[in-house]
Structure formats: C-alpha cells, structure tokens
Amino acid sequence: MEREQEEIFSKKIRAGKRTYFFDVKTTRANDYYLTITESKRKYKEDGFTYEKHKIFLYKEDFNKFVSALTESVDHIKTELMPEFDFTEFDREYSEEKSDSEGDNLSWN
Image (cartoon, rainbow, N blue to C red):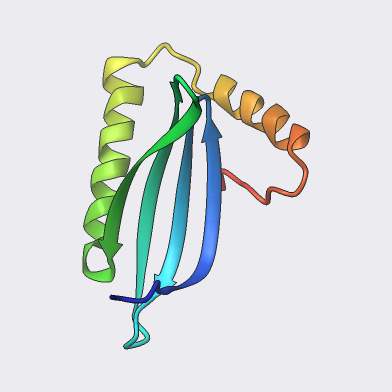
C-alpha cells in the first residue's frame, strides 16, 4: 500500500456547493506536484456526502496547463462575454473571505 505523500502547501476556494483544493505535495524522490480536487456536497437520504474529483499535475505540464487555462478563461472573458463584469465575483469573494476567518485565501 502506497503511503500518502507529504503536503507542502494548500489553498482552498469555496464556490457554492463546491470547494476546490490546490495542494502541493512532494514525492519520495523530493520532486513536487500539484493536486487539484473538486469536492461537491451532495444530499443523501441519511445526510450529506461529498463527491470528489482529482487532477494530478506534474512539473513538466505546469506551463502547458496554466497557458491553456489562461487562454480558455481569456477567450470566455473577451470573446464570449466581453460585456460581463467579472469583477463582481471579486467583491463576493472579498465578502466571503471576511466571513470565514482562519482561511488564508487570495485571488492574487
């Protein structure tokens, strides 16, 4: 059975019924990788359960991943929804952040 790898850094973003976790971990060979986990709360008869989806991102793919993500988001913002004010979500995030002390989250 493989042991859990050591977590070096973690960032959490709450988004409605979903929470996103960005976790930097290290391998046995002292290499680093990123896991991105989406956790979605679902209601069941006996209470709540969490459905999780995880992406493992390795150093050789960092630049390609960030480039594709940035290009995709920019396309939505500039080509598909140029009139939409995406800064309204920054305000909502600031309010949510001030309501949840102890979380060290940042969009920067």
